[in-house]
Length: 518
Image (tube, one colour):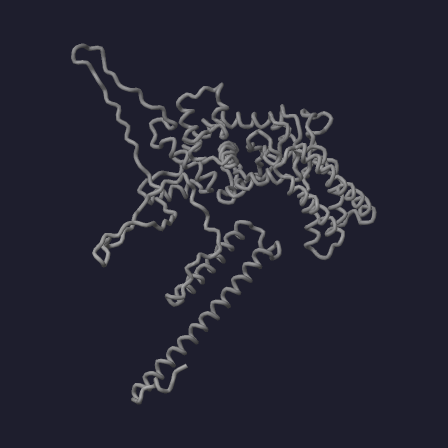
């Protein structure tokens, strides 16, 4: 508050002072108004975020569109935060980083160091300043993908004293004979198509921006030749998986262009997966996709020839062929998925009040809470804990199931959901008797998601053979990802080894988990 003694006697100076004070107040009011406006915008964004995250299923049926919506919301929020920081007075700006996940910078990335020295090291007293410490910060930088040309020269030598002929080093083996790409370039195209979901025509557009003009058909030729070379590695992968005694299996659609018509036919990718990590198994994780022109039980039976053990699946009836009395694989036992059983009940809850379904979901949730605490323990520990804690709950649920099935209309949605659970009951409770068995089939479902993403971008495969190539390459890439291996580096080294005559009887040394970087 001003003292009257501080006020000027001059009228003009007093007016100027009052005008300045009024301007400051007006500025504060405008700043408050802008802040209120930003708060309102943020509130609307938060409401939109909640609607996207927790709205009805019909409003978010496409997971990819859902992710895009969240990206846009988060981008808008970041822009508003930046606006707030820019408008704050210099002395009041927030320097503390916001509580967001900025990621971490891996140790293996190369470090380019820059040292920023003061303009002068001479002190005001004339002495020389010496270093007493430093502040170090790291930022993530990127060098955009850049094509380069490998020039290979092979000099020819001849003897001046005789005519024994010319000596020259042999030409190195190539995946594409007399072609343009190195094996690393082909690997880049494969990963871009099957891991990053970039169709070949889009890759051709990206290359053209650097002046590399290639037809899509040329890239397709590279992919096809690579798939042919990689086929023995894929065969070794699926053979290794089938030597396991516990696997997962699932299938997903693979639309394929029908020759002679302008329509597509529906084929399927059958995923055979191994993931022993939840019970500390020693075998590395892997997945192999096999293309089949249909969804009949004959296809998993063919794929699983010479497999014996526990197969964890969903409730698709085609798997019943595997345990039929005349099946080619009578030693297969089917473990079913509690997530699918729960899903049947959740669908009923979404359509209105359903106390019985809600009770069923709650009971299954208790089983999942027990399982969450058992992840990573040995099979013996998991078995003992399940017998003590889960088995009584499953027994209670079996009584609950029989009680309500006797009272609910068979043809009602709830009656059908309960009938589904009862139909697969023996396979659902198999996890109680074997610590290696998971409670659901989610492990293999996660491996199938990239196939669905690629299908979304490519729409369909152009031919059955194209779908088989897709399955071959996707199997190796997804197995790399499961083992935390860079698929581009792996494919580069593997293709190089294959074109240089890697021994077929040592093909297992080329499987993703045998790859060593360096």
